[in-house]
Length: 180
Image (cartoon, rainbow, N blue to C red; front, top):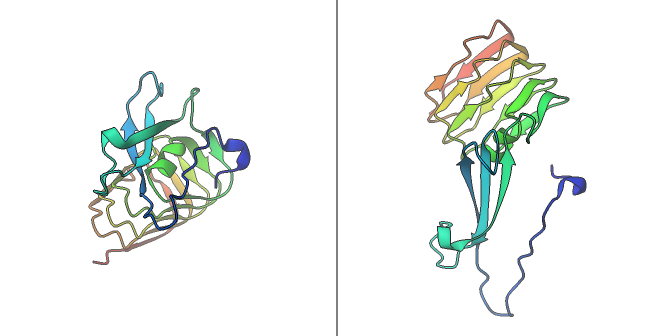
């Protein structure tokens, strides 16, 4: 949830004249490589009005770009995340790239997410649930994860072909359901 203290920029989209159809505002997330905008890389968040109404945010339609930088000393969040966290999109995933431990549950329920990578994460105190992800193909970026204090649940991920937990030594229970 975005708290008022976390808002750094505000843009307004106003209604048109009565009787006019309003345009669609689109948001596009793009991987931002390490560089001037994000020292450790991150996500570029582009926004704009879909003026040609093709359902795609074309480069000429982008009116603003903000950056969510990966962990480290220059951006994102790092260290221990107290409580539970839900990843609903790639922006949510990029926000916790620097997290090493989550004291509660981690739920990954992001229909548009294609890959899951949390390379710094070593411990989840509660449940790890990877569920209802229609586009997720790979969850191989969890190689540092050593312990899960609750259940490991993986289900309803139509395209998921790879889950790599090469360092995992402790897990409460394992439930994997492949439902197509």
